[in-house]
Length: 482
Image (tube, rainbow, N blue to C red; front, side):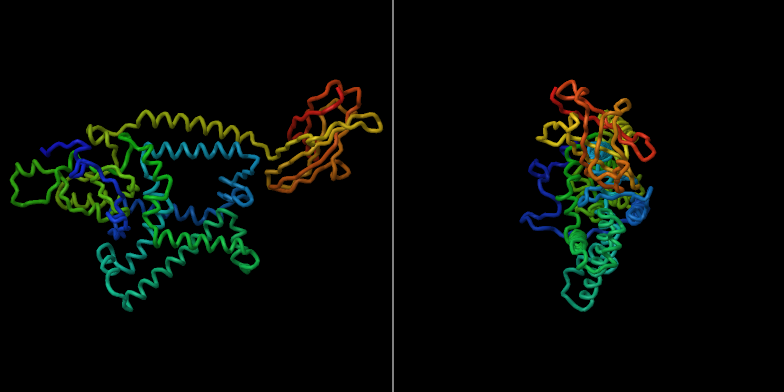
């Protein structure tokens, strides 16, 4: 039997403390450049399939239309947001805000339950870095140690053309990613217009593309894993949400310790005292963030599974069971029990379903027209020549649909002697609303003096279409002498 270790005993250093610096920084505070080996195995193959799916969705997303709306668009400049074909304007702040809260709860649930599984499988940073940019680098400069030696050798023609070609390809991919990203912000039609027109015609759009290209190139050529380790806020969130119940890529210290090289002269008793880990350090060599997964749960780990594939391959060669490094929770490893969804995850699920229900209800009842009516501030009532009482109003009418509409403001039934006059309306009193646009309206309401029985009278105004069908009811108040 292998010697038993507690989690704390295993990961304490020689001085009885724990690692207090990230793996990519040395004692002098200088960055350690990483040269990870290319992973291979069943998990890597599954990640390739996930990458293909991600790229297919990412590239085709701006071109997919649902009811003439893009699949996803976050136009911060015009304050238009489209999610799965549904347009959200600033007037939909409550619905959009609740949707963002729901999204945060989803992230919280998945992080608390499955750790940074998103980071390793579908995060754009990881997908582009590990599945596109790093393979290009490996192809031109070698894998792992070969690449490190290539960087250390003196500059010659071979090194110069390989480095130049690598960065040309990097810039090309960065330009492509920048254009797709821009399409998610301003729409694919506007990006096509940017491409086909002179930069001088849309200097702000051109500058945006240049900035995005430079940013992506800098991230994938220089920053790399530092984005996941030090910049990404989601990585910091992991430290708050992960505990012993969370599933992560874990090293089974119960089975693996104490580590030791394979010794053909070792006795059966010696082998029984030794764990399954042969200390080959392949799990460290393939890690894209430079950590040793055997040191326990670490903030740098993005759950990419490269160490699982490397360890499983070694276990096969030494005729030992796979899974020394695997997806598991710390509690399941320490207690030797199957993983069970913790109570807090069920609580998150309950909150999530509640939020989804409320969000669905609000989306179903969301109207295409939203009208806000207010009396003009500082204006008192006026008395007309006919002796009626008049109030001046401002109205803001928002058309959230993609169709042009002609609408009319009117009173409830039984108020035929009351008058509503819209400034700028046509002869039928119709107000023209452009698609996905906001229209400002000014109008007067006149009420006979005998109908004004109090200083403030509650009014219900109807918004009707050309056929007379009621679209919306708006509440306001009428101010009179009382």
